[in-house]
Image 1 (cartoon, rainbow, N blue to C red):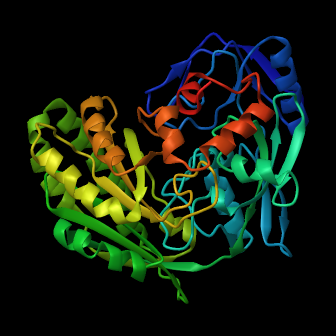
Image 2 (cartoon, rainbow, N blue to C red; image 1 turned 120 degrees about the horizontal axis):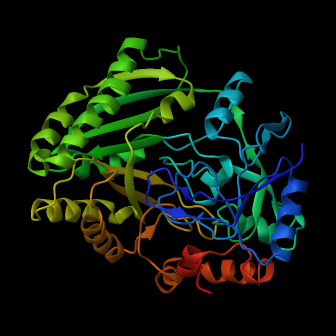
Length: 439
């Protein structure tokens, strides 16, 4: 199947509706070789190149006025190697398809985020993560990757082959090349027991270090305008499997977490003064529950309510202080916040532009319902997070630039030097990368 190349008359928009761009043309290559050919043609025509997955980034990281590559045909598993316990997958494969396919083979990723709509390349390139005491982001599970460089070369990278590229390109922001395939470490399918439990804000913050230490995967949500949190502890289990009943899962995960929540957010957007009352009701709607299931059915949840998000990675020891400052800021302001604040953790890793690079990390994420003004809230949150040395998620709203980020990341300079070597003409650049990486 040959690559499709079409003129572009309609704009591209991301999932949240916060970014729009009008590429000069689009392409849908069906192989790494076709993709390399598209990059070479773009260079001949003087066009910049960006790849877009499912548009789940809230920043303009994928926006372009040049060639927009859609990886819809670059999907599927290339091979499973049970000796090395790896799976090689095409870059455009959605995480949800990978998770289901691996489960059928009796395999699983070690950790994952809480949604699985993104493509594997989009998720890893922006540093998508879940929560974990010992297990890190999806990108930290990469064992090798294949990418097309600015001159159209197809490069394979691992710890043994082009190791300096591999070290950085696992979270490459699309700045080093176009990823065409990724090899992940996998392990035999296992079970997780999830224990979800309401807890007060004071208790969860005072016991945060213990809850993190005692659980393989701990996270919680705080509901602004209340003192209520919902906690989730996921730990490996010997079984037996005890999944949620269909009715219970539908009531909690679809009716309450999506259907009723959608209505509540819509009402709150239309009539902001009712938000605190709605928050008190919402925070009490989900009761304690415990269930045991395979990983992706525990880690991930359906997210049908559209929103805009900012997330900052802090040194883990700063998380509680920052969260308390955030709570005090909301309580002393006229802000009316209908979405809960999410807190997760990650161990330190060795990826240059990982938000957890070289430090134990806690993540604090804030959201607003799509269509709700967010800049005042996000700017106030950002002032708190940056005061604690925060690093913004690459795919979520923030205002940081290269001057700030070069101080926040010890190996920022290494990444820029590699980019200068691989893409000196900034074939893969755009306005967002110019802001966060410099020119």
